[in-house]
Length: 424
Ligand code: HEM
Image (cartoon, rainbow, N blue to C red):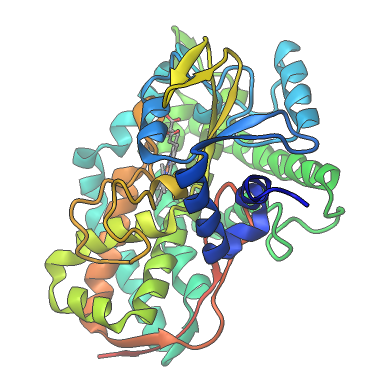
């Protein structure tokens, strides 16, 4: 019989549990109360610690010299994949080299290339265009009558249009980008994964490699195009960037597009759909924010806390140290459990309640420290604008069937959300 500790540890890494919030959050609550740095020793995986308290997630994220990625991947992977990654890096042939694979000094140099693009003063100029896209989304809901799957019809497409326009991917290629992103983040979900290989760890790895190859082929052509015909988009900034005085390599450029293209929409879609789901089940909260548009930024923050679409990132210890009074040895691998930090009862009053007027709301769904989400201002702006356009017209909303979350322990969110609604 597995011990309670063992069962809770297995739960929080099980992709299926991430589609079952009650089960997942009961396990996180147990770990926070009983073993906030629990050591996970799972078959096929190197041991790692589950960092489940808000304060500890911040402490680890704050110091990326003491807690870099090191020679581990930035997301949980089985031992064999970890070893293969190390070999590939040693041979100078990593699968990918994105911001979330980089430690200093590379990370800051690469991040600086696009940082200005995503700052509030720059993205403000996109507000009118994003508002048009939000109005299109509302018009689409209107055209659909009074029922739709909000994930398929609105939440997936609206953030996708925004990030692809910023990146510079033409509209006709958006379905391809969506599919590849879903295959990458949904590799453990039976409905989202790439078709063709077995649902085994080896099959999943092959799926991911094939998906990455498709992304690479697509983005290589984009780099070549923007080198010849630069435009005012992020793809041109990246394609023509220099690192240490030398042009960025095609491989690094493609890795960069890939992180912006994938991180930039699925997460925002998940929070948007999560907000609609929460409001559809809570007429009181819905009425509060509809009657007081000043609460929309609060709704946005609360839905990002509530859904916490990024379920973890990993770090490793660069030296012997201590956390919460416990010894952490050089080389220890740590999983930052963001959904747990965002339900930490020491930080949030009634953490299991969805409140549009939660204030303060110190959620850590965007991470913290040097890797703090590059797109956080954009994500919040997109969601704010969508609700500003939709809420004044939305008279009523309720669930019209079973809503379901994806089975994924890295990036997760609603995959179906049938709603019935009335627009004025
Ligand atoms: C609700 C939406 C979003 C959530 C919850 C989210 C969450 C996160 C998290 C947790 C991290 C890692 C932070 C850390 O390690 O400390 C991250 C990094 C990142 N995010 Fe987001 N993200 C969202 C939207 C976006 C958007 C719209 C973009 C578009 C550009 C984006 C681009 C990135 C990039 C490029 C990084 C890597 C930054 C680095 O390593 O320096 N994200 N995000």
